[in-house]
Length: 425
Image 1 (cartoon, helix red, strand yellow):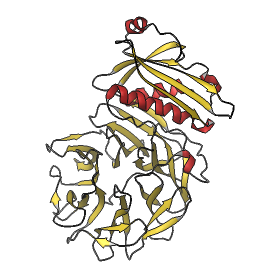
Image 2: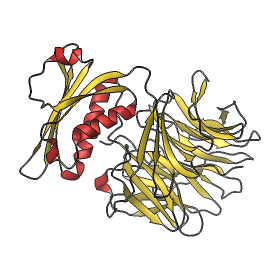
Image 3: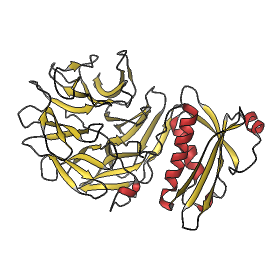
Image 4: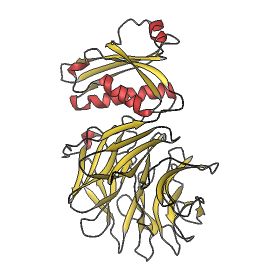
C-alpha cells in the first residue's frame, strides 16, 4: 500500500511565532480560471497609503482577483472614504461596487486604516471598517478588508486573513513554514534535519500537532506556538502518525501500529487517555474528524484496496464512503460537512476529487498526476493540495467547483504537506 499522506491544518498569526525567523524565498502565486459569475468592483488607491509598509489597495485587489469571484476595475486615482462619490460615474464604468479608503500614521506609531464599501447601483454604503495596526500587521488589515468585501458581496466569509502552513525540504533541512494565505510573510515555525510530516493545527490556531522523526522514529507531538513547549502525544511501539484535532480542541485522532496493523486511536491533547477506535484486519489510517466531531473519516484497505470509510468517533461499525475507483485516500471534510475531498488513483494518476456526500456525485478538480494532502479553506470554498510540477513539489489551490485554480511555487526547495489555517478571532 502506498505511503498514505497525512495532513491537517497548522496556522497561527505572525505574532505568535516566538523566535521564528523570516524565510527569504517567497511563494509565487499564479492564477488561472474565473468564477461562474464575477462581480465587477472598482478598488481605488487609498489616500496616503504610501506611508504604510504595505500598499493596502494592492493587497485588496490581489486578494479579490485570486478568489475568482470578482472582476477588479482600477480607478486610476486615490479616493478617501471621506470623499464625495459620484455613484452614476462608477456605475457607467461597469462597477457594481466601489472600495475607497485612507491610511494615517498615529502618534503611537500605529497606522489607522479606514475603508468603505459602496454600492454604486443603489448609491448606498454597504460596509465600513477602521483598524489601528502596528507596522508588521498592515498586510493583515488589508486582508481583513478583503474578507469584509468578500462576505458583504458573496454572502460567504472571506478567508484572506487566514494563514497556510506547509513543509519545505531543501538539502538536508526540513522546515515547517507558515505564511499568509497569499503566500507572503513566510515564517519558520520549526526546523529539523529529520522529516516533519502531517502538521495539524488546533481549532484555535495556538497549537500544532505533527509527526517528527528527530528520534529516528515517527513520534506525534503537540507544540504550543506561543510558549514553544512540546508534548509527546504518541510514542508507542511501531508507527505513530496522522494526528487530527477534534473540533473542541481537547483530543486528537491518530494512527498507531502498536497492536500490529495500523489502527485509529483517540488521545487527549495532553497525551492521556489513549483509546483504540477502529478494529479491522487491515490498515486503518488518516483519521479525520467531521466538522461536528461526531464521526471519523479514515482510509482503510479492509476491502482489499484503500478506500475511505466513516464511523462514529467513539467506535462502532464502519461504513464505506468511496466506491468509484479502486484506490482512494486522504479524506478531508468541508466545514459544512457537505463535501469530501480526497485523492484518487485512476489510470495511473493521483488526482484531487470532491464528493458530494448527500448525492454521491463526484468531480475531479485537478489535471495533474501526482497530487496529495488536500486541505479545505476554513470557509469551505477552496482546497489546497500538494502536487508536482517540473519535477518539483509545489502547492496548488482550486475552488470547489473547479473553476478557479492557483499554483504556489518557490525556488527554495520542495514544498508539500499543506494545511489551511482556521479563522482567527
